[in-house]
Image 1 (cartoon, rainbow, N blue to C red):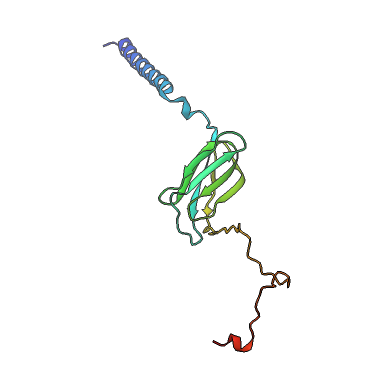
Image 2 (cartoon, helix red, strand yellow; image 1 turned 120 degrees about the horizontal axis):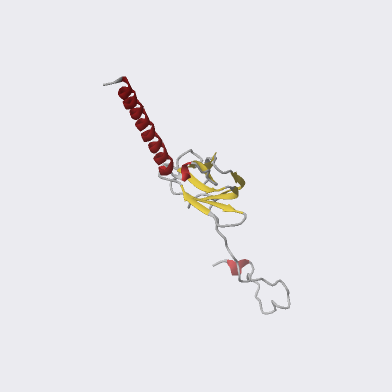
Length: 160
């Protein structure tokens, strides 16, 4: 084999490797989802829901309500943790659970691409009873004119 044919062969091999590398890079660029390069417009709020004794509260309902638009709902998991993703904005967060007082936090700011950590401690709800009185109470008259037919019982009359 001549020196020229060896050089041609090496050049062809290098060119083939470079071509394969270029094709692979192009395929990788096309196959990579655009979502990986895009920034998200959502932010996340996460935390732990507990009672006053630091016991976890699973199943608490979490609602993020914006000034305008639809609320975003979530729920604490079996381990008491929650994670709610919502569009960037300012929200009022409400956490409810039967047997506990409702917790509300206003002006909660969620920024795109960030996570806000907020642990929630619910307090035991106050049990309230409402009694409505609608009838008039009986009255006793001390006016002598309205007591004309009354009988006064004294001394020995009171002994049985």
